[in-house]
Length: 275
Ligand SMILES: [Zn+2]
Image 1 (cartoon, rainbow, N blue to C red):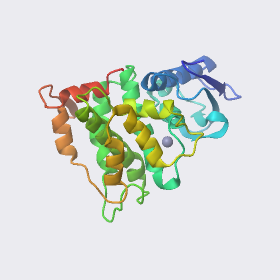
Image 2 (cartoon, helix red, strand yellow):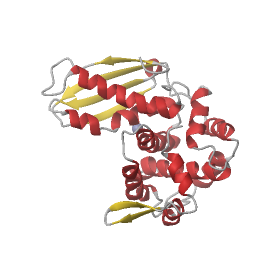
Image 3 (cartoon, rainbow, N blue to C red):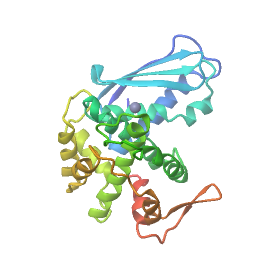
């Protein structure tokens, strides 16, 4: 049982080399805890999670389906260690998917973008991931979501980079803009809670506009719809250097350097603070 829901877990049939069934259940609880905290409760009342074992290493091959209120299939290698489970982000990513309505293929980027962005932020909010690690990853990975030559916007450019990191870039820009428009009182988290509380779960097929309008209603802004119009069918690159500067973020000797005197340092802090 997790706050707001129940997860039916099927463990691998065979014994793993070092990891015990309890270690696997701890891993499930940890991922569910970060997701429940981010959304205010576990996003779906019933989730089925099937864990299988194979010869590959670590946690891999997570997939989420709408079936039965939400079904996650994920594999762990037989030699997976407890520290592999501790470092794993994929189960959190998969548990975020049930918290957004099912989209047509052209909008797959928003499903993956939310899972990519929220996974790091949610884990930081509950102390599972250091805040500096979140921003370091974003500084390294967000440029992978920028448009390349010939880009025709997020709805028409289905590359790996645009789908995962282009979608995450949409989320980051939306988060900052919502906070700018609300004196930092609301953020993407409020929009996503509004969508899930309005019934926007993976079992429902929605138009993207319906989900974004519901998210905007929760923050009292039009940020999501406006940003979608900017990014859906044209490249719309993001000036990341200015964004990092405004948030008070830089890299010095391979480490993240925070500048608390930056104009939007408070917004940066609010993003990874538990709500
Ligand atoms: Zn995914």
